[in-house]
Image (tube, rainbow, N blue to C red; front, side):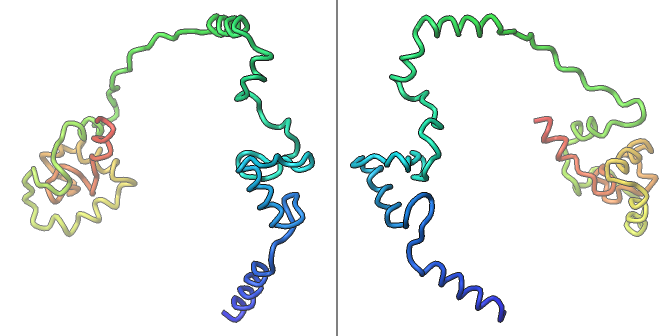
Length: 192
């Protein structure tokens, strides 16, 4: 805290010391005058200090800017015939790619497909759909879920073991059909 106060005082002192030179001007007041003149159109920037249209910051040279928005400059080097030739050259290079049908959903030969299961169900997590009869199911539920690296892996094992109707591994104690807090919502959102 003791260090912050002197730094703050120095920073405020630097701000209050008055206009500074910079950005190609002798001081801040001359910059403001040049910027005001440019915006009102009363004078043009001097040859040594051209201002950009975007912010009044001096640019290195006026030739850095594009003249594509200047009608006279473009008309001096382009014509209707040159536009037509350029358009024909672009059209000759145009390649139309025919759309291909989307591939169908692949079946997973190694086990149940949790994506299909998510899309086939409509209940929300925690909404009981299946009856569970084990009175001690909540006690061993967390231990059973800890055996799996992710909720997706637990859901696959749950479906492979007869779920959602049966819960022999105690992965779905609330009977919603979703093992170990697995949530079908991300899969359902992608399908919509």
